[in-house]
Image (cartoon, rainbow, N blue to C red; front, side, top):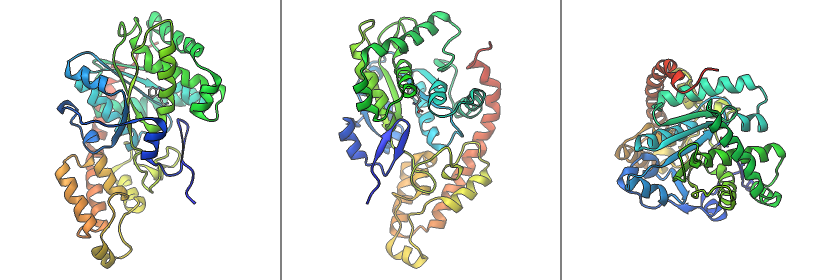
Amino acid sequence: MEEKQVITPWEVKGSVDYERLIKEFGLQSMPVLPKQFDHLLFRRNIIFAHRDFQRIVEAVENKKPFVMMTGMMPSGKFHFGHKTVADQIIFYQNLGAKVYLAVADIEAYNTRISDVAELKKTAIEEYLLNYIALGLSPKNCDFYFQSKRSKDGKKACAYYRLAEMLARNSTFNEFRAVYGEITPAKMASSLLQAADMLHPQLPEFEGGPVPTVVPVGVDQDPHLRLARDISQRFEAFKFLQLSSTYQLFQPGLKGGKMSSSDPMSFIALTDSPDEAERKIKKYAFSGGQQTVEEHRKKGGNPDVDVSFQMLRYGLEPDDKKLKVIYDDYKSGKLLTSELKQIAVDKVRKFLEQHQKEREKAKSKLDQFLWKD
Ligand code: TRP
């Protein structure tokens, strides 16, 4: 029997049925997008669903201001799954969005890791350095810790005030319906996340209602549902409804999900090229057949092959080349060892370049952080 699908912000279990998720959560499939949104994550339907994304499309088409807001818990290594989100952040920044980027250290403290010093170190060395190395610019970017919103007291008060006052508009039953099991720690985390997503619209930040897109993994949708609902009941301020997009879970090396607690399930952006090669050759789940003869006869399955999926998620940016690899693997012309070698070469090249950028990024940290 198949394992039951469980998807909450703090737990993802079982095989994920995206069609069912779209129905169950009430998401929209992605519409055809104008040329400004020509990015491989959209073209390849890796960003597969949305809520109210039309508002963002309109803002871009009419050259109106908009905000891109997202956040990540600083737990463990920054891996290729995180990179997919970082790629979107940088894409929106280049498209002209004002970027709000949260380190969800309070959420991580409340739900996972109690070592505050470790959280801070991970946030800077794993997250911020990689964001910068991938191309995040300090211009038009408000990077902050949930535990340390702003050195400007007015701004900081406005953010924490919002998190507290949003509580008025929610009920216990609603939390239970959206999250299943709920605890005070989780409740505090989801109200703070609602404040993360909504506070750019406050007078102290962007000055008033502004279209805001939140790109996330689909496990974050409960947070979005709650924030969307309570924001529209808020009397103290009139928020424009949030927009959001949802990307697929990038498969872990062994198939299934990437998990920060199992280093053999992912390639980190700080893994050495040799380590990455070893992981792919040893662990990357293959869609190929048992023997070469059988593979030549029946062909492989690129849809479940992890090396192919790594190319699809961005290591092969050229759609035509990707299609040739897809077809050749499917027909049996391309062997698993050959496909793995293509992925290995791409990963090695990416990591070598990226790790140089990471070294350079160290001198830019101060442009994103402030001294106490
Ligand atoms: N809950 C997110 C995670 O688990 C982190 C997060 C905090 C976030 N605030 C956010 C995501 C606002 C999107 C928008 O990683």
